[in-house]
Length: 172
Image 1 (tube, helix red, strand yellow):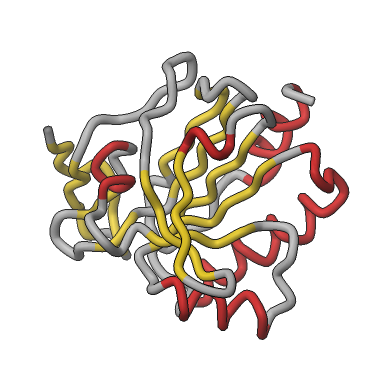
Image 2 (image 1 turned 90 degrees about the horizontal axis):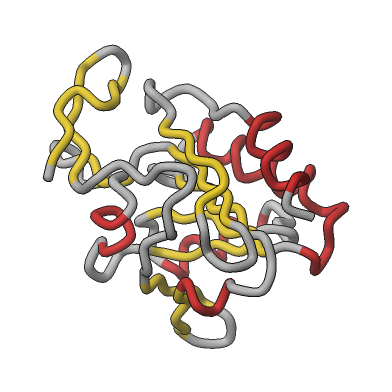
């Protein structure tokens, strides 16, 4: 399933592959990869037991994506180990790790959908024309149910940080 014109990039309409994920539904499963002393897998089941925020960005090599990751890193630090926080992109895990190290990102883990884009398809965030993920936020409860979902309509714009954080707070 595809959603034509679901998002724009600098005004140009783009198509998102997959179905829209909505609040109230069970979060789709996924398999992402991250680098921590070696390449490791991250699945939805690894995040159960705590509220989770999934911050989806096109690439950590761009200013808005960097800003989004830094803002969530800063605002989520107060919750410590009460939550899971993950930035998802198609950047290679090694590049994600390098960015997080250079920018002192410690409160949000980065994970990559580079291998098969299963997250992008399952969460409806893969931009067909560009083969990158669109900007989106998903907040999941401790059982993996979607409590909040935001697909940012303009890929070059920032998400609604306050609404995402408020949704996360309601789960604590």
